[in-house]
Length: 457
Image (cartoon, rainbow, N blue to C red):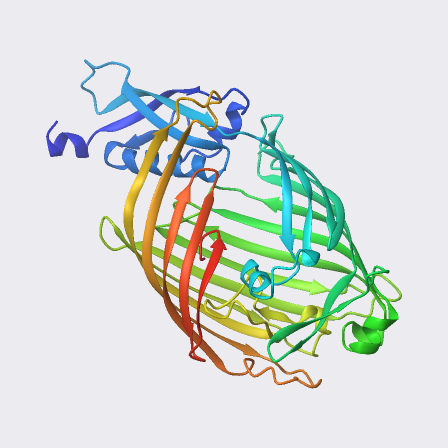
């Protein structure tokens, strides 16, 4: 077909066939397509619709593999608009996971290992999760943890509760109690207090989250939450600023609103696209007589992923949090050092009210995604998997503002610029698994090797 004929040709989606969805309802799959039945689309744009729809389906985390093919219904038709039939073949994942739980109290696995990998600070138990419950992308989870942190709870999530399939709800309830807590930060390290005979902190939370997703790329979330925290007198005597006004109990309601614009190609390990979010959170709504918390913060960020060549990829991000007004209690002063951190500072915690974080990376695809079929495994949800390997370099930076009037205990990493650089190796495989091995050098001249799970940002 010559270029002029291609430019003037349109395809009309006459039928859409779905195969391989033994559990997933068809409307869950159709919801993720960038086209609908009876749509008329310029032929020059058709391939981009196929690519985007495939990525959207992979990003649901319901399928290991997705293949979309199409054909003309009438090969002899030479008109400007030609009808086509689309076939979507999916390979569903394993949706029920009765998985063991192993977690550590410290901010990350690297810190726990360096501090002697003491099993007394480990949490173990089990979690039973059913993804894609009833084939409607619902999630039901039950959790029971023992050891360092004892926790019991559950969650139920349904993506659509309205006829337009734009509004979803998530219900969560958790109860946790601890024999040991960290009650201060000194020399940029956590200070722990432990009572082997008594539980010194308990935490109950319940939340209802509404998610509005009118299209594929935008979503809004409204989260309503109740929190009830208790500690014993020893914690407050050692750390009077742990809660507000030396209280041993803190009960409050919270509300949070988030707006997300997500154009990433793959959420678990993106290589192209952008991600933007902004969030406003309010702790303390004045609904309880003893609700002695008054805290509002704004957070947000932007990420950009850009292919440079067929095997070289660049990425960058910026994230911030701004907390105006009074200094919050210690419990709410976590800034960098937990899930949000500057690489190379994994061993440290930097407390503060506001922060800004920068990350950048340049990586080379050492091994392109390859699919393997393990024939001796009888379960098709596991006998076919993909593996990709990336090596690269990175540079991070960050700054934490700490206005606390309490003694800072030589926490010198606050109110100063942090920066680091290093190199890493990423292993990416199915079920959204990413293993990262990194070597980093920070501005203190310290170097180290670190293991992480998940994409760097």
